[in-house]
Amino acid sequence: MKSLLIFIASFSIAFNAHAAEKSTGPEDMPETFKSGDASKGSSLVASCAACHGSDGNSMNADWPKLAGQNQKYLYDQLKHFKYEERNNALMMTVTPYLKTLKDEDLLDIAAYYESNDVSIGQAKNDEDLLYLGKMLYRSGNMKKEIPACSSCHSVYGDGNSLAGYPSLAGQQIGYTTSTLKAYRSKERNEGEGALVMQSIAENLSDNEIDALANYIHGLYK
Picture: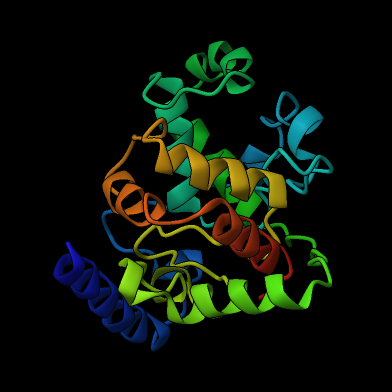
């Protein structure tokens, strides 16, 4: 398992280095991924605003910020919810609405949120917690088979729009905490990246998850 995670981290670093040479705007998406229409998406998000904010910047620490998130990741997650491949108690109330939409509409919604700027968070001023979060995020802990988060999500939390690795910068503390714990318990298991995240999260303690969530909240692009 350790060698597998090292390989994953090394591959992601190489992939990100290659992607960094290019613009990651909609016009540079791979030919297999069609960019959505943000203007059309803006008219489809009224049902989303109550939890995620009108521009995708949620006010509740337990609800994810969607603003600035890359289209590929958001589009994939919306499809998971639409086709009931991902379970979430709150999102179940929106699933009937998503089922009325075409996949093209979901892509437009993803494009709308990507077009908005994510709000900058404020990490808790706890020296020990910040240090632990920074070390795990940037360097990982190979003794515990935990690769650096930055290998897939970039040093400043930009993510990778080409690969569909989510942006993490400014993400709500409560949401990041619950997400990592859901991966650790294998409750969250949809999509190709789930197995990788499960294998990483299973080695994270509650304190390490708290440290990462706090550090990530304070990241900005």
